[in-house]
Length: 109
Length: 114
Image 1: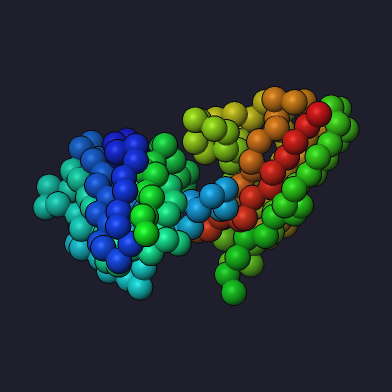
Image 2: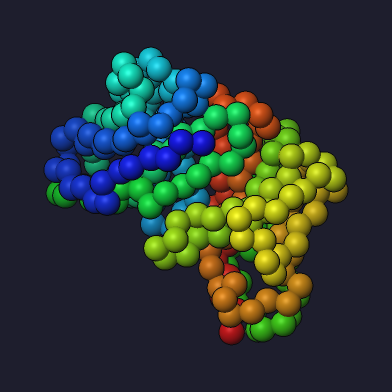
């Protein structure tokens, strides 16, 4: 599975959109981009995933560049409860999810 | 509700005293796995199972055992716990071989070995 690169930390003002970038330049054609988050020491929580098209659900939007080498997770209106570590993961047909160190997002009042 | 349930959530034990952490899922997933999470090291896979009676080592299997006698259960066994196994443990499950389906994680078990 391809590796990902994320910034170590980011801040976002409450109520504003949080845009979390991820680079995955070695992604292959059949690999999906997944986003999870971990609040404090709780279990990782699934947010969204996509292959090549942009995706949106009730939690977030996922924007994948046309060459698929990078993506952005968008939390449209960040709240204090969105403070967490966000993990970008590239996954093929292998079953393991490889978690890096993620981006620590702090939402500021 | 789809969920992965781990028990116990917190456990303090002494060195050498055998313990088992249970994991159960209600989604009929074939694939189950155990991770440990330590500061600065992220989540590392301990063992995984592709289906009933099929288990294999992950990245950090030393000191652990698992079994998969039923599809829904995947207990983690520490035969002789040591202080370096003090960690936060997560169980996860998913459908096997499907890149388009997410994994579900339990709420974690914080283990302290003294």
